[in-house]
Image (cartoon, rainbow, N blue to C red; front, side):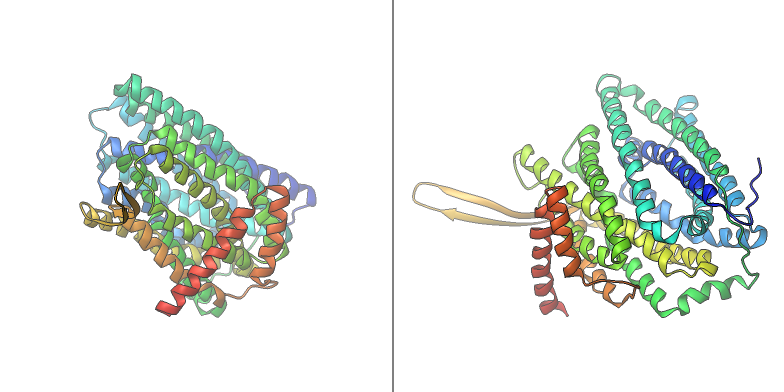
Amino acid sequence: MNLQPKEVLTEQDVRRGLKLVIGDGLSSEAMTTLTGGAFIIAMAILLGANNVQLGLIAALPTMVNVFQLISIWLVRRFNNRRGITVICSLLARFPLIVIGLLPLTLPGVVTIELIIPILFFYYLSGAIAGASWNSWMKDLVPEKQLGAFFAKRSSLMQSLNVVLSLLVAVGVDYIRKHFPGLELDAYGWMFILAGVSGVTGTLILASTPEPKKILPRENLFIMLSRPLKDPNFRRLLVFNSAWVFAVNIAAPFFTVFMMKSMGLELSFIIGLNILSQVSSIFTIRIWGLFADRYSNKTIIAIGAPIYILCLIAWCFVGIYSQLWANLVLLAVIHLAMGFANAGINLSLTNIGLKLAPTADSIIYLSTKNIVTAVFSALAPLAGGVLADYFTGRHLKMDAEWGGPKWTKTLHIIELQDWNFLFLFGALLGFIALNRLHRVKETGEVEKDVVVRIMRSTLRNNLKDNFLTGTLMNGYSQIKSVFKRKFF
């Protein structure tokens, strides 16, 4: 198979390449759905993982991004991003098949201590492939279509995630109830199927054209220092690092909290995740259009406050005695988080692509990934340590009304174990968001103007006035109180 780049890509080459990138995205999404999220957490808990090990599993995907230096060296050495991406992607897929075979062939040997090193190699190879892929996509996708194209790709991937994760969750829950001894085997088959799907996506990617690009042969560390000397890009790194730390100190433990503290079945947890995915699917293309029309920074400034409010809302989950009340609150939280995450994640990716000079795109993007990886990896590890510390501790606030004939107690808030992490993450999110205004992006529009336009658009298309009206205005009030007290 010819993996060499082409000197010039025709318009037909670009159109064909974009379709193939979507095909690879769907295959990769099937792979990550079967091996990530609630499923890898459920498998780890089944194998007896503690909070620190759960935090380590959550940290691995970003921890290995520091090794993207290898990708930069390879691209400079061979000037073939497609070849590097395809080979490293294949190396990343085979560990999944190995993990899948362990419980099927050596059931008495498989332990969480054995799984984690294999996962490390899987994520390591994927990180090296991802750095060259990002640079490749920077040159393949027309800049004016970045938001719309990746929004379309993400919505299709999320749609697949919704269907596949629900089917698998129902199947796993059925096995857990009726054939509990086969649960680990079920996870094994899931990893094998994920590996096969990943290999399929890599073969699709191998047919995707690459425009030729020669990276100058400079000293590697001098090249990496260049983005750090760019004041605006450095400000983006500060915000992005602070934001991912705030998010990842809490987010990896949502599933753990629902499984351990609330005792929810896997299908319930996946169902809630599906609500979040559906919310993202129906809004991500709108986010993409607005990001292209206005700016990615404006979209982040709208979505991040909603996500912070969701973190605060997690502190109230579990305080109600009726299960249905907690489930309703969880459903609202997941819908709002899906809405917010769709815009935040899309814009964080696109603003990095936009601010990176074309000639140095792989250097800028790899530096961004390496720097943010450190904070993204430290966060769940810190979260695991804090979760152990807060185990057995709680903070409870009640309001009681007493009368001659009856007394009514209202639970205001009850923090315990992982709830403390959620509140801590929200506080860090507030601090991180105050760094966003220092980042400059061409064409940025005042947030309030875009909010008004989005409110009208979403009211007409999604009947979502509550999210863009009440939540955003509520955040503004909370932010003003927070600034008066702490800044």
